[in-house]
Image (cartoon, rainbow, N blue to C red; front, side, top):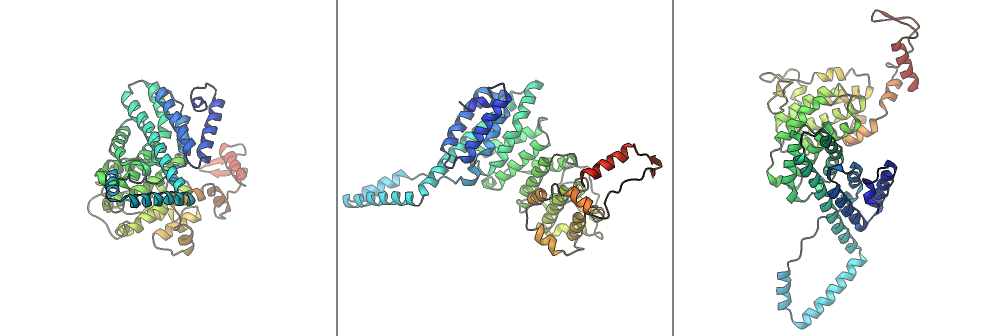
Length: 428
């Protein structure tokens, strides 16, 4: 009764109430039996509605708790070996074996292992239904789309929960889906349907797969590195916070976790471009990018040649070439740190000195390096304005009534004066 209200009702308040009810079940269901029923009903709903389904129906899957408790299902028992063993037993031995199996079953119940096994079974079934739903949407809508702009907009609205869910549960995907999923994601990235967030989710999903059982597939990830490298220049101060978070996830899974597979030329290219874009971000994102740059340099010791101003590689650095393998980043250096050392934010100043080995600060080592880049970004959000006004060198002072500003006199009613005054008062 509740699940169809996610998309059938024409009243948004009813859809929101149904969404809260379903997500509450997913959060509170410990065993997974009730969640499996809801997932099956949601799958039927999406199968019948197709592209016209409300995106919140897919968003409910993001609240499933399978990422914490799922376990790999045990291999099925070989019945042939069991039968052969029973044939070799005498009647007395069979009777003793039956009694032993009963005692073992009772012991499992006492130790709660049976409930763990049931939870793993329910979670496996839940994930199968979730992935089938995701693949049905991606393949059915991707290949059925025409030049109809309405269909494209509907499809784009469904992409966010689908790709976010795939990125979240990528490490739990069954190996038989890997090859098909990677091909679909590559076709999506080659189309004009994705925005920057969608592309980042695709990259994150692919490399979560390749970091685990997907290594045996022999998939060449070069095209995904090229895609991410070309999109780094599109991520600037206007980017949403969610975009920065997904980017940090991608850099961690594509470079740090793949350090044995990624080539040295790619590493240098990413370090150089990440340092460039760190100049164009707000303080929390800039600090998180500097942290991941430091971790990359630490993971690839020879990459510190970019910090050596006396070393110049052969050839020229092609900064506008969107191919990390052939842009020849070894012929450049990280001159951006000379600007970051004079940043108005004292934390970025100190961290820039730390990265370039001109400062040894134990506080930075203990506070930043022991944390993940995403944790640092979450911690620093909301503190940038506070640090700006606490810094004595950067405190905004109210402009006098008549002040020369680039040759112009700022009057009391000038827009610049009002803007600065409003900014100062809001952050007091």
